[in-house]
Structure formats: structure tokens, C-alpha cells
Length: 300
Image 1 (cartoon, one colour):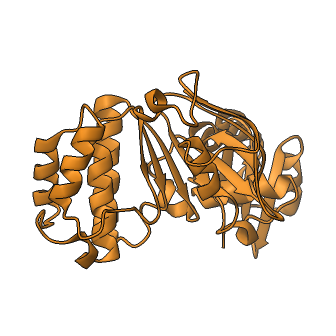
Image 2: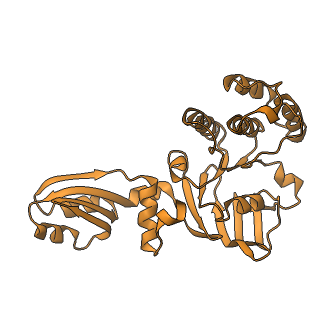
């Protein structure tokens, strides 16, 4: 379990992270969303013990992270710009990580390098950005740690490779129940892999919620009423987050239990009615508008 309690970090006059409190349960995939400059990378570096928070505490499995070798053996950090030794090859990095992580799987490393069609003897500094990202993920997976921290891991990958990397991470989660924290500015990248999502804005967590619960509790309905008075009858008593009317077609976002919502709509005879799935972006738009923010400005 990862716990950050009232964590803050300031660089000169910039408050990069401001009193963040977040708890990440074991076996979860936690998506940390925010614009560039929101504090995602700074928070991840503090979770990894690379930098010390000015205030608050960070613990992994009940142990402080900063300058704690025992704790750092539990995780692998895939940074946005992964560091590799000068003139090193992937084979050199494999040997290095095998010395650092006692459970590093050298055979799987070789197999994944072959699967991704990466030359293990080629200088890493001659790799493209996408190839370096693939290599960093392979190293992180083969380290066999309990936790993996990913900073913009999918950035720079083509769509096919992005899906391949997601599949590998998903397989690790299923096979080993690892806990993964993924920081990204792109909600669409996180939608099909995360269990829990936190929105970081101006250094603070705007909100942090379980994705499954959010999807269960917010619904988008498209319908056509016989008359406008029917809409008033149906919507009275429901928590309507958003309503759009185009001609006779109503598109309504409602918070609440699906069965209860259906009961309200069954009160009248409808010309047309269906419940549509919401995207993660639509859920975030609904949630942030309630607290007075425009998600489109926060993540665009």
C-alpha cells in the first residue's frame, strides 16, 4: 500500500505539489491525470524517494521511502525520460538491473526484446524515443517488483505499440497482482487500464475516485418525449448533472443508480430511450463541473 499524507514540495517560488493526500491500494492501477506543470512528475519522484517532500510523509508498505534501500527494492520507476548509461546497450542495462533487483528475469528480458524486435547489442543512444520507451517498460516488467511507477509511459509510442505495452502491463497485473501508478495528461490513455483515477490540478488533488464506482453512478441517457411536460415529470427528483436538447432529442447526464433512473423514465410513455456508456472524459467533465471546474481547460 502507498500512502502520501499532506505532501508538499516547493521549488523557489513555485508550489509544485500542495498538501496532497492519497492512498493507493495493492493490486490497483492508479491513474494520475493532469496538465503539464500540474505536479504529476514531482509527486511521482517523491513517491519514489528521488526527492524529499518539504512537508508530509510518504510510506510504502508502512516504511518511509526517502533514503530507504529496503523500500526502493519494492518498486521500479519508469520516468518520462529514462536514464541510461552513456554508450550502454540493452544488454548492459539488463546486467546492471540484475545486480540491483534480485528477482530480475533475464530470460524474460531476452524474450521481450525479441518480441518487440529490439536489438540488445545496439547502443541505446541510437534508439528512437519510442524504442527507448519500449526498453524502459521491458526493464520495469522484468524487475519483478511489487510496484511500478510510470510517468507518461505511453507518450511517444505509436498506437500499435501503445496497445502492446498496455497488454504487457495488464498481464503483469493479472499474473502477479502488481500495483501500478501511471501519470498522464491524456485521459483516453488511462480509460481501459485504470481502476482508480486522481485529478491533479495546480499541485493538489482535485478529486480521487474509483473508476468502476464512477461509471456505475453516472449515466448518460438519450431519449425523445412525446411532450416537454413528460420531461419535467421524469426529471423531477433525479440528480441531473447535464442536459442538452437538440430538437426533440434529449441527452441527459444523471447521477444515481441505473435501476432507479430507469424507474423514473418508466413513468411516461417514451418515443425513444437508451442508456449510453460514458467515456472517462465525460465522467470527469461531469464530476469537475459539479465542483466548479472545466475539465477541458484542466487536461487540454
